[in-house]
Amino acid sequence: MEGGPFEEATIGQVTLVCECGRRSEIRVALMPDGSRAAFSCPLLPVPKQSPLSAFETEVLQHIADGCSTPEVAERLYISQKTVKNHLASIYQKLDARDRTQAVLQAVRMGIIHLT
Image 1 (spheres, rainbow, N blue to C red):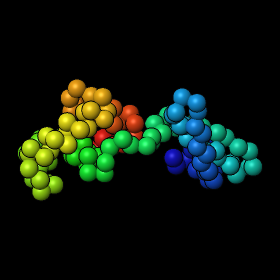
Image 2 (cartoon, one colour):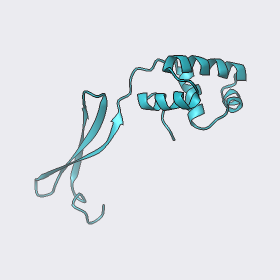
Image 3 (cartoon, rainbow, N blue to C red):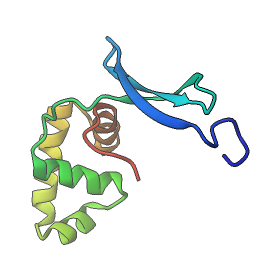
Image 4 (cartoon, rainbow, N blue to C red):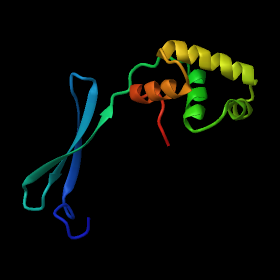
């Protein structure tokens, strides 16, 4: 921010976790005159321990990235049936009815990320 109040400020970062399981990053700027200014960043989900295996997570990440079942199979060198079996397991573990719900739940839990 050229010309702004934080141009020459030293910025540190503190992460706070509230009881609701979300975290907020609070940034503190030490101004050239020695004063401090604080500002917060958006709340981010705290990653929880994943109920999914590493391979299930990889399958679901490909789905979240927009891949179809045949595309996931090709990228992971597995059959389409194996992709479908992994998806069935993912649905059960995340209590989801379909791939959209599974992706949404996994994003909320911090298991996968939308790109």
